[in-house]
Amino acid sequence: MFGNPLLENKRSLNDYFVVKPFSVLNTMEQGWMRRKAFWTELIQNRGKSRESKLFKKSEVTTKVGGLIQTFNDGVSLFDPVLSEATVRWFSEPGMTVFDPFAGDESRGYVSCYLQRRYIGIELRQEQVDLNKGRIEDAGMGLNCEYICGTSEDTSKYLANDSVDLLFTCPPYLWLEKYSDDPKDLSNMTKEEFFKVWKSILNQSYAVLKDNRFAVLVISEVRDKDGSYVGFVPKTIEIMEQAGFKYYNEIVLMNNVGTLRFRVGGQMNSGRKIGKLHQNVLVFYKGDPSKIKDNFSVLIGGD
Image (tube, rainbow, N blue to C red; front, side):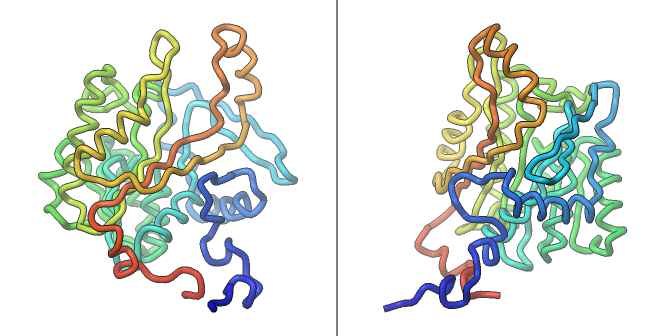
């Protein structure tokens, strides 16, 4: 009968997995916030290149669980702890992480810090320069490649079966405007968005090796009439049609932040529930029985 290494070694799940590998990830936990503070100080990501005329940026500072938290209203920053957990759980050192929407700094920085190779495609040259500069300043430039262009051309930039993890967070349709470039998905209509999104995911399937994971961080968006556009179910459908297996569903519970000031108006005007989470969708390409052959043991491992 096998023993429990967590009990035998008196170590926690966080010691092995960064955060508890549950279907709900709580960013408000003390351990998560401490880890986030570590990465924030290391990366120094404040959404600098996004502070343009397209954004009305303000900050709200509040105290959560004894820790001071600052929330950007208008400039979303990808959580680096989610980056770390994703990269550690679904790839191995030396593997290549591909990000077709590489605007945020944390996915590239964390991937390289954890000894993965990172390839990101980003439309805006100023963001490419900033992200690459941060990684080069940290001495990790050899493991990082940023391509300034559109991820609609993924097949032109990357060979088939050449990357080990697809990890990205696309624009949530028109929820934020990143540029005035017509190739920017945030400037497209709903119909145009899903057409291009499908093309990008199909090309991403082709460049991903067999028996590898794909992780998409998305969230529902409301259409002009107030109903959801179906971003989550449509994405799952596209991925399955491409050949992926829908493998894990994770809910990322975010901090309340400015939602507490907005939810009253949303409820009174249209009975819209305040959205406090994002969807982390995990897919697998290949035969799930081979996962144990390609990925190391985390409990009891290094």
